[in-house]
Every structure is written in structure tokens, then in C-alpha cells.
Length: 386
Image (cartoon, rainbow, N blue to C red; front, side, top):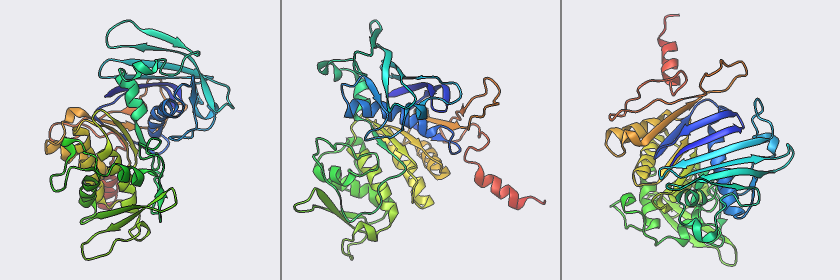
């Protein structure tokens, strides 16, 4: 598990040291830095995955497109370099310093170091790739393996389509940042066994049937029919909600299901120790579905898959809280971080992030101003005498 991410001069952060847990929820106003945390992880991931032996941080790739160096350096305190540090529960630590000209679309590796669980710190420089390790050593380094296998799902997920891309499974083992490969991953791995802790006992323990079972908790009776399109690199999916109806095209079933599908496929396809980042899992879901999503993600985290969520939904939070109260996931395995917008005239030392905690009953120990409190504030307006 990645236990901490540290950023220096990256976008809106002069310095950030953010603890992560098995399930981490990032919340706060728009443009307060939540997505920045996910992007920092994703830009390192895409450099390692898409450009394996690169000694430069690739800002624009398959996971994220961040623009130029000017777009990623802290506009208030930064100059020409950024720092990213990651620590995991095996006490492995990777630290990278990147630098670049303001108009460049990648950043050179200036310096870095790796601290293993046991042994001395190893320094590396711009002549070596980001992980600096030879291929035969990569599999022995848990942190690097987690970053390479990481899945990042953006808020802008692919909506209903007549058909979806179907590419070489060796190149599309993950669902894609927009969920564009979710149907293909589901098809190629339809008969693969899922993690035992994630098996819904109402269905066979294979990927396709487990995905259907999980989708049914959001959309009762949901069934899928997946077929490659002949003589095309494409795949179609039929969806039905009842045994009495025919399979329909996704364009006739609404946005909610196609937004949930890549999340469920990514979770059910993951293996223990994997890292899954999800922006706005509540998109196009009814409040009851949002609460169910919170509970589902808590269950996935309890199975050993690390999840970091960015969300604006109090229903997602409450689904997680209910999962804690029902002993599905320990409160100690959850981190809540509330971000606030940075202002130029901030008092020195004023935190950009507050971190409420859950108790074993799912209660929040304190509620920072703006932390999922809009409903209460609106109700107070209606009940006030003025």
C-alpha cells in the first residue's frame, strides 16, 4: 500500500505531505488541489508504463494530459523544478526531482533516490530511467509494481456508445483513464477468477458474472451480452434489466450504467495490492446509488485493493461510514482529507488540508466548514426566523 505522497512546488502545493490509507477520500471545493494529487500519481504511472525507460517525466500521455512545465509548477512559490516522493508500507521510498523549461512538455530527471526496506539509500540521476532499476529487479520492488499497474479513472468517463474499442489485450490490460477499454477487458477476461474476498456468492466467481452481480446492486436485474464486431477492432455490448426484455444498446439505457461499468470492471479485475484512483464515482447516479457506490468501494478496499477517491458527494461518504459501522472495513483503514483553496494572503502555517477521522461506529470526529455540510446549511436557512 502507498502510505504517503509528498509534493513540492507541484501545481497548487508549495509542500504537501498527504497520508494515504486502504481507502482514501479526497473532498473540498473545486480547484482546491484534489485532482492534483491523483494527477501526480498518474503522471509518474504513465511515464513508467508508456515510456518505460524514460529519464524524463512525460506530462502528456495515456492517463493524463497536463500541458507544459508552466502548467504543473506552483505559480506562487515554484521556479523550474518539482519534487514527488512516494512511500509504501514496506517502508520503500522513491524521491524524484524534475526540472524543465516553462514551454517544454516533459521534465528532465534532475536527481532522485531510492530507500529500500533494508539497506542503504541509493541515489540516481538524469542518466537513468525513473525507476533506475534493471528489468530483472523490477518485480521485486512493490512500490514500482503498484505504480505501473495502477488504474486511474477520470471524471470524464466514456458515455453510452454503439460499440467500444477492442485492442490487443497486452496493450489494454487496464480499463483506460476514460473507461474506454472496460468492455474489452471484460470480454477478454470474462472467465478469469476474481479475488475470493470480492466474490458475490449469488453468481459464479468469474469476471463477467461477478461484474453483472455487482452492477445488479445498482441496477437490479442487469445482464450483459458482449460480442466482438466482425472485421473491426470494436466490441458491442447489450444490456437488459429484466428477463422479460431484449438486450438493448447502451445508448438506450442512460448514462448511469456506463459510468458505473468501468469502475466495477476495474475493481473486479484488480488483484490484491493494486492501486485504483477514481474521480467522482457518483457521476450520473441517484443518491441511493451513490451511497451504494461508497459501500462497494469500501468492500473493494477491504479485499486488499487500495483506493483513492475524489468526490463531492456526501452520499459516497455516508456509504463508506455505513460500511464501517457494519464492520465491512475498519475505520483505521480510511483516510478523509478536506482540501481548501489556497489564497495568496494566507496566514503562514495555515493548513491547505484538514483530515477528520471516523470512529468504529462511522461517526466523524469533527466537520470542517464546507466539509459535506451544505445540506445542513440550507436547512438552517429555511428554518431560521430571518
